[in-house]
Length: 447
Image (cartoon, rainbow, N blue to C red; front, side, top):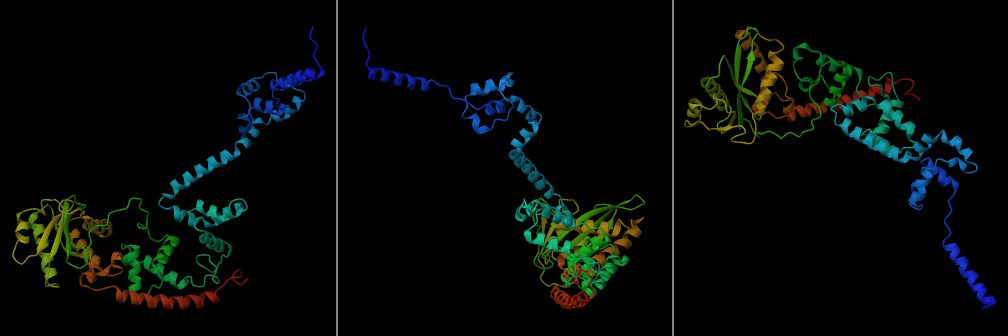
């Protein structure tokens, strides 16, 4: 038998030791096994542990064989809580996504900004409660307001004044309106003689009379605060409307149309209108119980004769719809006469524009003057319409014309004189407010 030397034996032993270490299995802490069994193993460990081990530990029904496993029985009762905490960052992110979606949807509501502003005290309190965890710059975005707006609201909430109509400190906001201005605005908004006008028209009327010394926004604010008159404008439109055709001077573009109105005696009446695009003035109108090309001709001739009395060089584009009353031999013969400079255009056919301007006038006349009274017969209808057209043309300031009446705009008057008057009124009002508010303060204002 061959005898091995000492050195050879040492080499063989070393080789066996290396081989033994190569085939030795990795050991895992008992905690990892129990976390896996209860579904609480952190994701980073799942990548380093063989899937066979994870599968075996998850389905090991004899988990209690590990020494000390009874301690984990206490934790078992709170497994769901532990799982929830483990998923908390993901849940927080998910809820954040949901909240952002809700905000985007709610922001589309017509009165969203108005609603947020009316709840500014709750908004300020909510942001201040979480400012330790949520920066103000991020918190204000949830309410679609700016940082400066938040601080303004904070000042409003903190510095309320019982002597102020809007509960704003008279000392800090010494330029705010005073009781006499509010009373005058209330008188105009409740005046029965002009109650059928829009709020904007009433405002311009008060400015022109020299009785109102506030801005249009403040006038609306007073109306909403007192709930005196229902408002229809100012609502947010999500679909951008195409701007209609606009004239740059009077008698450049006219519109002709018919609107239907039924009196209480059951008779249907057709009201014919011709209006000027630039000034919105109603140039001519007539009432008949049927559609007639001759009546349309009559209104068109009447409008043309009125325009000739104020302008020597008429060159009119007449926009009509495709109705038979507008497209017939009577109308064609008239506009083709020598000396008559009228080009007839059919809306949405000869031009890309609709006849919406006169349709708006039809609606105004019916809802402002006719429907509130609802005449019984043709005689009452004619009487009310005569008043309505005169009031619309010559008395009621038009908001689209910046306070001018349609007749004034048609005659070439500008808003320069009105703007000068408004500037003087507002400048004088500012002095009066400062003097009043610095004297009429409450205890809070004096601190």
